[in-house]
Image 1 (spheres, one colour):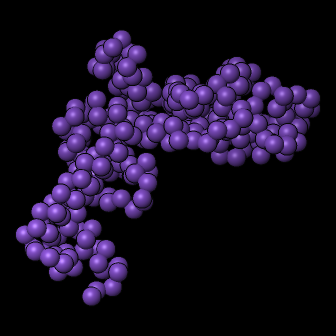
Image 2 (image 1 turned 45 degrees about the horizontal axis):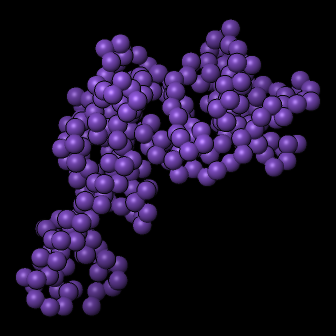
Image 3 (image 1 turned 30 degrees about the vertical axis):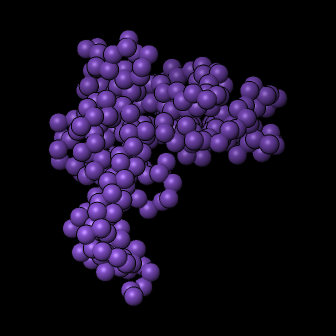
Length: 265
């Protein structure tokens, strides 16, 4: 009997393609005809589960491509990127990178970046609960202490910068968007866009950000203190309004309230 790793490899190959059945059959007891039929059933179930997982994680990509095309993409993705995790919620993590290198989607050049945004939305739906910060996070801080403040974002918060209007595309494909899943004529596909993803209660939200605001939060997420992040935002826009950006963050619950306010890292 082959080692366990080899048994798993052969069985996995048989679930991936009928071409792998001949190597797997010697591992199985009983009639080969019956075992081929059973492998076919298991393979169909595996493909259906993987496709369903991708449909759940990437509903906007599915609306853009259409069901049949998306299901074909899901099968190609499954062949190229087999699941390495027992939790199918994490199965589609490499889908955007797969689309980057998949020639047939070149006609939809914005699709990989939309997929990146959608994966952040998917991750945010599973993010842990956290107590968002209010104005108490900044209360009583001297200017030097405020400049040195390092902020932490609530779980599920994510930023995106794309050469495509990914936030507009995502928003246009939501059920509340005029009941339509067609791109509005007003969306300029040549317009680069920065986007933010966060969870507000049980709902995941997506919005576009101005470049300077994105620069602020990008620097903060990367660990810069508030003073350095403010400088990065001001470099992008000399008229950048820090108070307005912080107000937006507090209203959306973007900032995590640390257990010890004296150590907001």
